[in-house]
Image (cartoon, rainbow, N blue to C red):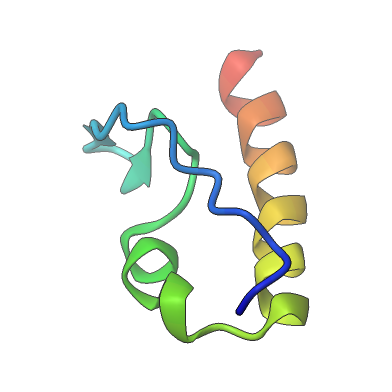
Length: 58
């Protein structure tokens, strides 16, 4: 079982210009592949999410 919790906030809305979910800030590939990722890969996605969120909020 994974130690890394999913960033899903159950607000699934895709930004059409960036293909990023406006709820969790993951790409569709990241969302689809989450259950198969290692914890290391998931942590990398979480780091990417923080960067995207910051960029999209500015």
